[in-house]
Image (cartoon, rainbow, N blue to C red):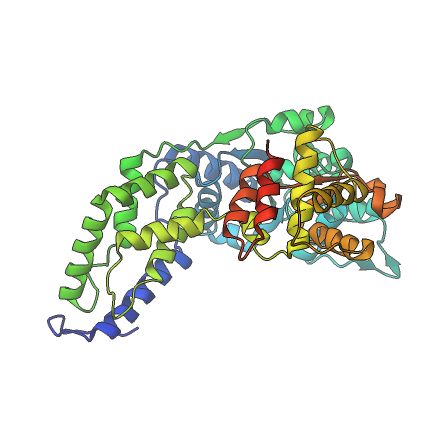
Length: 434
């Protein structure tokens, strides 16, 4: 983007708006790491020293970074890795493996990902490593090759670490911690988690091989700091091509942040999550409303953007259901109330629906059983209902026990917004809740 040298020349408003969108898109979507992470200097120093001992001196280590979502765990780790890789020796030797508990859902998938990231061939001679045990053996052997001085250090980063603890027998964690403790190959295992009780999830044999080092990040952010961050994030930089436009924009942002209704919205977001990513999503939605005709963000834009951020996805899904599917949801909720949350099956829901047709509805058509079943299956595909037990898949479909994944308020909100909802269906829904 070419910067205009003569700042006194006023740019057309359309061009200014385009520049504004570019500035903020880069700021919110391509976030750069800070030179020095604020407020976590001691944690940064501790982690850097720890990983340096593995990368430079070949000493194995394991550590957990623990803190709530948005506290800066990933940012801290990325800053440490950036600083660590500034050393040429580390850059040349250190191997990195990044795993995520949300993606590597079992040890077998995790092992395949490790071999892929370490560029370890899966075939040696004519032998193909197919089973879990063989792949694991091959991997550990590859890590242990040579003595400590000739082995390249490997850093394992386990994001969503607590999810790896749910893997069968915790085999992967056990073996990684075992190698790190035995010092046969220099490896560092860094777990990143938002669960404070994560050690309680580990089996005894795994826990005994873990170093018990934990780095805690706890958000100390106050609301005034949060509000100030919003103001600075929405302000244009000093080198913006049009000085006059930038001054007007920054003045309007200051007024916006002092508006009472905007303050209430920001307070709600602050109470809900101190995660800067959530804040950036809110600000991006606000900025999407800026145009040539409306070159500033108004309080109404912030309110609308906030509503979109807090929109209930499941309640929204109900607006697209057919009347029959909506009636089945109401029947399920009615059963939930009557039987105090006990699971139900299609037959029970159908009976409840038939009672409603018989008692109250003059506008509803009496649907055939296959149509009801199709509607029921659609609700399951949308994950508005789910089976109580996966093993019950062998049970006849009409009698498979289900639970409703919606609550009273979600159903009532959807009914209010549902286009042309028959009055008797609304009345039935109201009676279903007492």
